[in-house]
Length: 358
Length: 120
Image 1 (cartoon, rainbow over the protein chains, first blue to last red):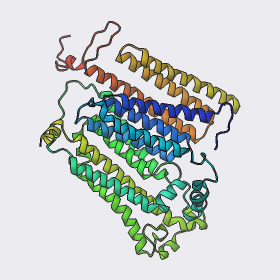
Image 2 (cartoon, helix red, strand yellow):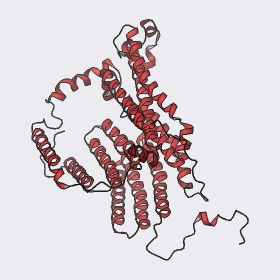
Image 3 (cartoon, rainbow over the protein chains, first blue to last red):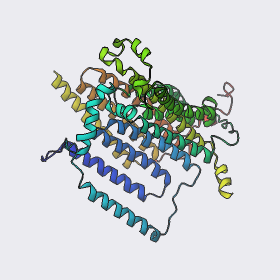
Image 4 (cartoon, one colour):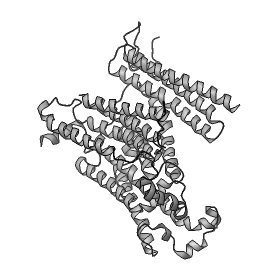
């Protein structure tokens, strides 16, 4: 929708308020010296961005921004800050001149370029007139999944998404190679404190962790119908594990979800995704062409009513293919996030100092 | 009927938002950690409850109502626990309340003597 030039437009007002908030938070991040404050402010920045994306009618992106930006990256950064100092160094201001010039120049060019963009929701813009429209028209017939975002992400652009999953897996492997898969030495048992100060926290966490995992599964399988999918679900699943580690201690969590399990599951997800593609190739299709997921003689046997009418029978392969690769995404994302968290949280400050000296 | 419900719901939302704003003012104005936590948590839980109740009335009875009820349950579960954990951490790191006379009875000191052997 294009903002009508009225005296007071509610959507415009909300946009302006949110963008001003983003600007203020960004300014505060630059100004603060405390790294802890900066991390929390980054979380707030992501949350406000997510709200703004909802206002822009992009719930899938907003969902990802909320769980990744405000959730998991805040926790990973907090894990990292434990290994370093909490304050940024006060550097010489003259060294900031060149970076500031680059920032101002790039910002100016971007603002200049933004004036040439088509208006929001302009029906004749290239995005809406050509490829987006083609997807919206063809997806119900080709894929048969109500959420076109999922159809594009998992089926039309399945190979791109495979690349993303491999990137996440590679990032996890990279962190693990640098920091280790978990603790170097066996973790000390938690100190025996007399009297449990955190009993409320423990009880609530015990109640919440299964619910969070259940919600992750809901997001996972609801991805065909609405906002959601493997990436968001994977991060939420990892959040359940990390919450357990934060409340009950890393030792307990590593006994439940061992680092070995985490890294095996991360590889298994990529393998599942690629395996679906290879099965499609073996049945005569292209890589990740889900229409060939089932051999024709099996596809013939599937009754049409299972998917609501004989005309949707040919969507069977698409439905199953999307479900399987989303499962692969979930496994890889969740296990990689847990591995990265283990990598950061499993190190003690002593480890970091010893290695810094070497 | 639906119009009236929507107006009542809108009223609830406005009151809830006003409560949350009051909470934000409290966080800025109150003197120490504990009163600030108090301001933030109570007004947030109450404000969110009122906003969700208002949204329930506006949306009418449907699946959305159930989802809003679940969100409410989640807020009621997490917000007080977060406030408790925050206050606990502040207490553990030695923050003293600034206002009011108080006596700190630490549970760990109280239990140094095994249970049942207290003289009292």
